[in-house]
Length: 328
Image (cartoon, rainbow, N blue to C red):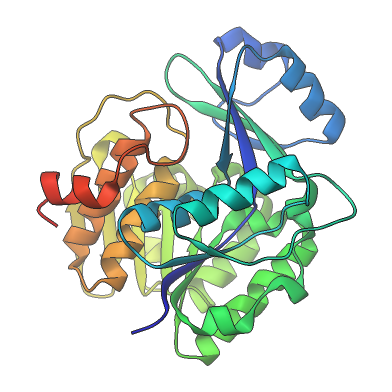
């Protein structure tokens, strides 16, 4: 048995979450539903204008690691923070829930990353992210021993926004495969796909064993109009893909199976973290030997829990919830 079921690598970010009206997005020139990178000045301007907010440790892959830990799984994480107050909060939070996290903090340079998450009345989240210290993740931050000790190395697509980060995660992919382990990628955001489409297609068709994407992302990847067309384009190339479709549930593709699972019922409050927690449930199930259907059910349950409240990390014990609601 490996020491870790999943190693998650991504941007270590502290989320600042607030409810806003639609006109707030217009005033601040935000594209609804997107993740936009901003500089320190823009981040400060949006923060100053935001209504009362909640600060919580976040970051896409960090949320996935937190979800795996909540399910009782063995998770590790790599991501860069600064040795400042928010960095110390992030480090404490992820370790306190049982995730292995040893990436060295920066003592110089930019502060810990923040993401202003604006939640509109329809529960859509619009993110303005200042990468700060997390954009400094580099080759030396990839602990090859930890990669070798994980069944799956899971990487968020947002890591392609900086060349040094991309270089680091490509190294992690190669180390994982050299040790006979699996590589997983989340496409993260349709705007992210637009920026790096050709590289992502090459990755999906060459390096990725388990792909995560939502309907908009996979359609953007192959520049097609329908979900069905995207599946047909993807299927010959990917070993395993878990594709989420919001209220329509999810579809899991393998070389010889197509498994459709309905969405888990819930009250929609905030979509932040839905894809991150779906990946957590699915990967926990997969590395625990569950069927593809049960993996998708666990993913749907974890996603349903996180969208039922503000914030991108579970507020209940997911292992207990999975036992009560799914018998898993």
